[in-house]
Image (cartoon, rainbow, N blue to C red):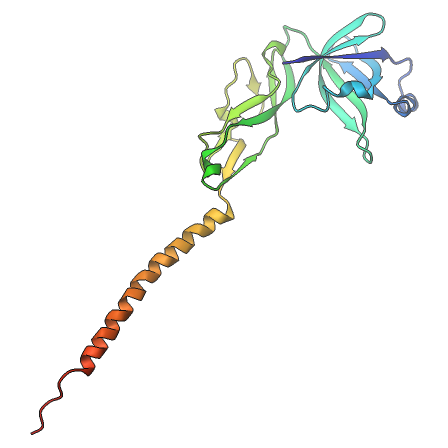
Amino acid sequence: MKTVSLSGSLRANVGKTDANALRAKGLVPCVIYGGKEQTHFYADHRAFKEIIYTPDTNLVSIELEGGKNFKAVLQEAQFHKINDRLIHADFLEVSEDKPVTVHIPVKAIGQAEGVKDGGKMSVKMRKLKVKGLISKLPARIELNVEKLTIGKAISVGDIKIDGLTILHPKNISVITVNVTRAVVEETPTAVATTAATPAATATPAATTDAKAADTKTPPAKK
């Protein structure tokens, strides 16, 4: 897991009024919990580029004024309902010897056989909730889908990562390859064509028999 840095300042006051004043200045109110006590601070919204606006989960090294340092992972980010701007961030303090629970993004690797055959691949779970030591946490969970055929899926139970426990039921599908309408419609068309062939072949035979009947020599007159 990659480590990114975040610098901030301790909050003198904690409350809605103070938080709104910080946001008006382009600052983001934050909190760190999970350790001995909660620590409230704020940071410039531009400093969250590699923390929020990234597909990976990163370890965050937080440095606050007064020489306070924390190792943490982002637990929750809140955004403004209208302009989608970051308005609050929660961090969980971590240590090397204590398991932590985080959400890790999923990435499909390769092209599935089922897609080559006309199927459609779907990532059902964009992130997986996992538990493990910080040293074992990957930035992303990469799943090779090359052997995935139409109608098949990679489930939680199929994923094995050393040192990690995936906190979802084993039967839940993570990535699937489903049959598409084009593939479904192709089979009935082929069947209809095959079924029509015998009927087309039988018609000339029936016509020949009819002509043969018309050309028979009439019985002699007595």
